[in-house]
Image (cartoon, rainbow, N blue to C red; front, side, top):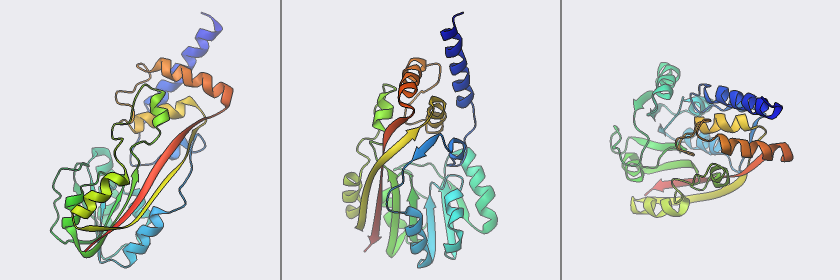
Length: 257
């Protein structure tokens, strides 16, 4: 076996090890120093804390493992609830949040399923990277209640997807889509901020871990099925030192009339 073949086999072996690593919650700390994401000039968490301090109740949609909601605990109102539908994250969220009095509902993260909450039950609804079921959100808010959402833009890292012969699944997931839907549901859009920045990987194994953790970006991705794509990226990283893609997010805040 040639030296080149042995090197390639070693690379593939390392990538498969990354592919098999577990991922729970919404915690990418394993990639610290290997995946670098620029941050927008606005802070979702800061604004969420401001709104919670002036609210009587809050619902956190698609809370993941509850890690971000927990990081804002000092600002929680009297009543706190959350939803999560991915079983490993749901178990983690319940373990972390329920002892603190948080109601955690098992609920699919989509734009169609009704939510098991009363009309006007919440004065604030938070949604960070979850599906936006606008009609249900409007129904659950009290008059004057607020929605704060940070969303991944539908064209997030489309250049990374292209490296795997994939295209964005929801390219229309933009403020231009949701603002009219919010208005039609009786919500007044009070703030919209869009941002684009750099998503940087320092090694190809980090990309493997990332794509397995976020499987909807490249459906069906495995090291075995995309070995040629990974090898092409390996050549690029040897010449460039890092791989840089375009990250895109947006923040929207709306109020119920």
